[in-house]
Length: 194
Image 1 (cartoon, rainbow, N blue to C red):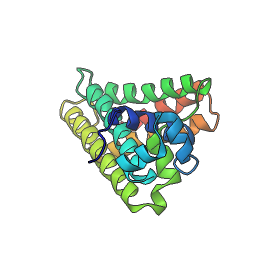
Image 2: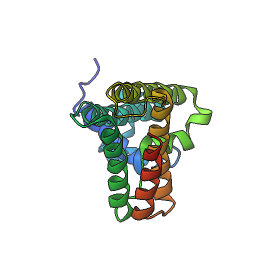
Image 3: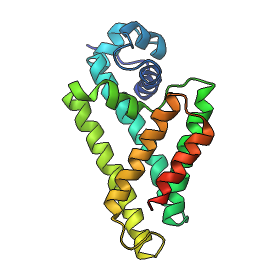
Image 4: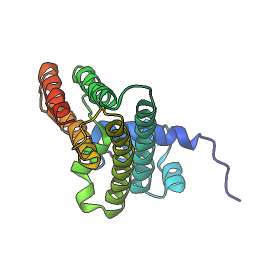
């Protein structure tokens, strides 16, 4: 008879997410995961099957949390353009705060760069997440266009791609050392397209 689990699986996923986010997939060892979760190797591998499985669960958790934050912002009472500005400002604030702290950036952006080109399962999960964010932002922009908040000749889908690219670009620029004032200017330039 198998022994019952004596740990909270979701807390273990959260702890693993933090470890992967801090070091990346490749650099996070099984020992790092044991230290982060407080579990032994056998508990990790019996529960999650592999480092890759645990990474997929951690990435899914991260995307779920970020999607909830995005949904909350997009469902707010702000006008469409202000929602996009708030989204970009949130990134600038996060990255500016992180500069003096952990500097780990965004797990999704990091995973696109490190893992997605050689891992079809992770690439598919990232693509689903992208499509979900794209549809949500497009819907807001389309609604804003109908309300006259976004120029009538602008394509909402293209602008949604621009918003997502701007978020990623701001994160990468911040990691490259671009200062807050320059990040603000980048956000302003992106918003000019709306």
